[in-house]
Image: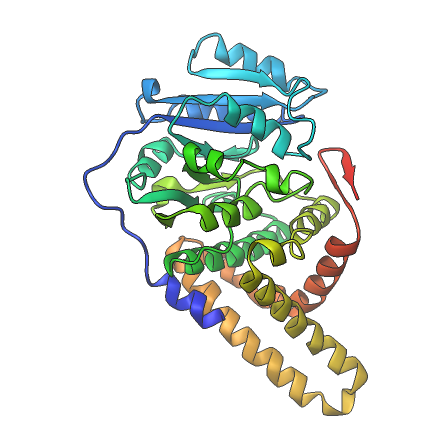
Length: 359
């Protein structure tokens, strides 16, 4: 499967000319984001895309800090930026899907574009994403990263960034083959008409995570057009929230919590997840149970590492993050144990997101 992703990274999608200029609605869910949202708003204010062709809908999800006041202050001088509130709307939606549903329901744009309140985007973000919004395209998976190559990362942040880069590389590889498997809400775009056609998040309303990955599978099944990956650096987003070991753990278990549900949305993807988990699990288990035959599991580990290394190296080149390759060996060593623990915990345990616990 690694070679499938690797070859897909060589099939970069280049949008055709001419450039379309659709009406875009940027929807952002915000809960207690006072430390980040001002920077995010400044990035959106300075977009090169015409301000009369896009709106920004910030949905305040019952914040207890100054998030709403910051957004309200900016909206007073920038009429295309709007502050919304969840109030009593969409009570059936779990976690982030609730504020996202509020925002999308009031969006006026032909296209919905999402990012997070703790993300930064370049001035060219919307203008370059718009070049992919042709009539034969229904959704666009954007690239996101932990900080940028020009910024300082601690060793722990580098390992996180390398892990996230591997996920983004696999997402790009599969999308370039025409069978997208994953996306991130930090940089995601889709037609509002397609979102409405699949019933929004209603199918996955009870899931506390998956406003991106699960939604992507719903969109893929309903779409008759392209779902592409945007590899243009002018479309790249970055998140600037430093994850502590505890918050990193909750983030990854939140992501893993959707694995079992994929059997309903994409059985092929579910089988792939199962194979990945089993492959990683068998390496340390076989070492523990049969230490005398350690050469076999170590050989398997080495073969897996080589395949993974080819994908992450190509991804680092495509996305300009070769600075992360120095920590890849560390990630490769801890990955089997990390995947086992996260996979089990995410499937049978709970996690905390935005100060709310989800079982």
